[in-house]
Length: 403
Ligand SMILES: *Cc1c(COP(=O)(O)O)cnc(C)c1O
Image (cartoon, rainbow, N blue to C red; front, side, top):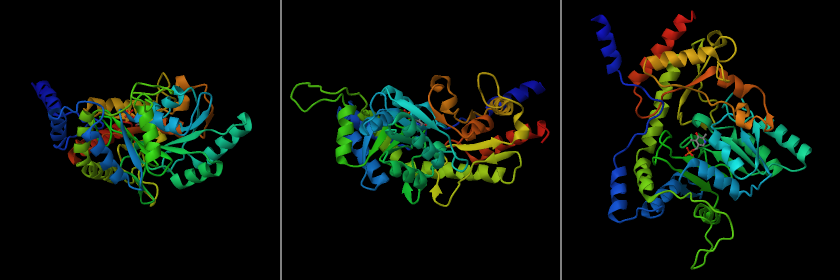
């Protein structure tokens, strides 16, 4: 009898997921409009309007191209800055594989650079060292730098842009997780030569799947559009002089995007609020450290809230197959049993088997973060009560570990 009751209580609790999509309500209106007017194609009024809204949002006279994914946007950004087979491209190591995969699509070679401890993003000094070393070694400078605003935490852009400028190398900002984050009073994604947003289902806003390329001007946008639509030359017949891609966003999905623009600021505010509740709960905790804002210059969107565990909780070594520390995996399992989805931090790309032969300039930071950190649920579907449940499960885990 007692057992049944416990099982019931367990089943009644909703599962708390990392970051779920949340609809504002107007999405359907724009989708229905697309159907009613038969604009069920990868161009049309929703695409144009969504791009226009994104341009107004990003500001700085940037032009925005709506695409089928954030990965496609990175691919086109690399194409736009002239990356060719055999070139080297510097990429932040501490990130999702999509930041880097398009380098390989182009037959170019990734060069990984480790992170600094404040923002967890690309270390500007190490970037400088890496570029100088690549030039000395290969006689050629890298063609581009991909910097990531991981978990929505702005990277040290002033320093990175300064290094990039000193070598005259364009910076591509992967702001897939950083939509709405600000640095020095500007939105991230609009600071480098090109910027990238993702509208995948788990990002700040969604189009079910989609992305955007932030371009410096109209000419750059139309060039990227040319490659995104199979590189069709301006002839009455299909004439091709370049290899293109099929990367345009569907007018149906763009309708979702338009509806999501209405709730974007609400989403960002909620992510920030949830982060502040976590931050307060872990404030002064000796064993769990919340990754908070690192500077007055930056205003993160806190897409996901992240924590690191103290060495006392971690245990020795790593779990098998190159995973995080045993303590991180044990906490993940404990939370999973309590109905909470968490995820280890991104495994650094220079430690991924597929990239093990790429040059990497490391300082141990990304590796240590991966060994010791977790992403916690965030976003519009997570309530204060959910955070309370998550924090108390973590506290219970710490108690059982004897700390
Ligand atoms: C999600 C993500 C991407 C890719 O975006 P998609 O729209 O899923 O292709 C790129 N970089 C980072 C850091 C991401 O989190």
